[in-house]
Length: 178
Image (tube, rainbow, N blue to C red; front, side, top):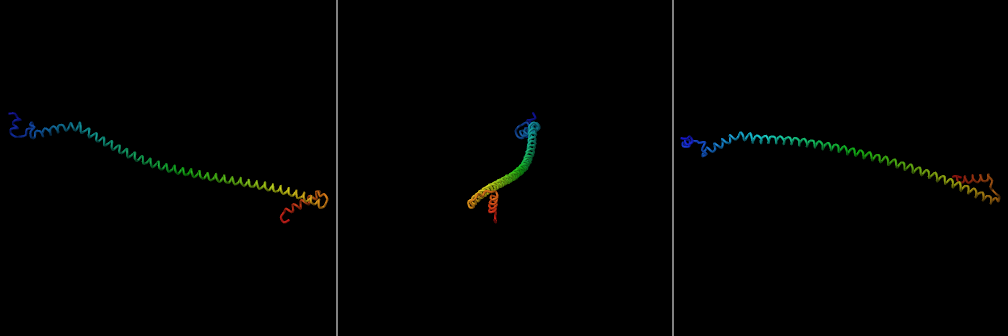
């Protein structure tokens, strides 16, 4: 009697029969036999790929953190330089204002000096014209006085002594307290 019939007849386990436990046996046997090649051919590369992916993610995360730190550092550096630039601009503006104020004072002072010089020149010119006018008036008064004296005295009063006398009288009349 063949062995498979003997086993089946006695009611024991027959691994060759797919009825009962034989199907589960072959399923486990095939699974266990296929597990090693599946692990080496499928699971190994997938696991390596997952580890490599995790390593790349960690590396990229580290790079991103470094880039973020570098960006923050650059940002703070830019803010410092911007503050320095603003301070320098304020200094330049202040210096320009001060130079403008100094130049303004110089211009005003020069204008005052020129105005004072013009006033002095005008005053001197007025005094000169006044002195000329007074001299002309005195000469006219002397001439009129001599003419009046000539008519009163009925003689010609033209001598140099008479002229000096009348001029000194006229000059004395123009002085205060005379």
